[in-house]
Length: 76
Image (cartoon, rainbow, N blue to C red; front, side, top):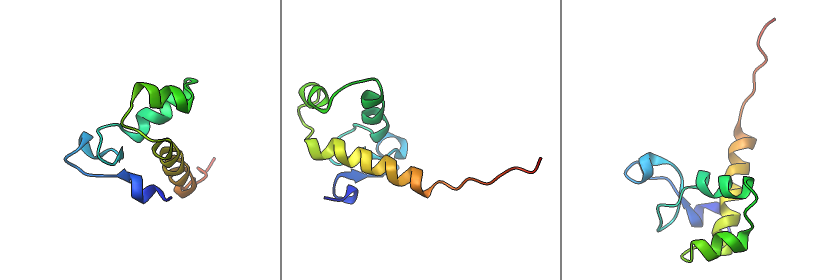
């Protein structure tokens, strides 16, 4: 599974934020739930249209964004 199978970006859906394909549930929302202590099972119970692979795809997407981030030191 790759995030490309599950995560899409469309400027006409949720202002272009990455969402789980076929939903209006953003990657940001799922990551926030996980950050606040929600377990995957809780997310799936509250959002029955999602699959475990969707939650994992959100994590993969977030990881990719962080890996692509460039950090430049500022002169002192």
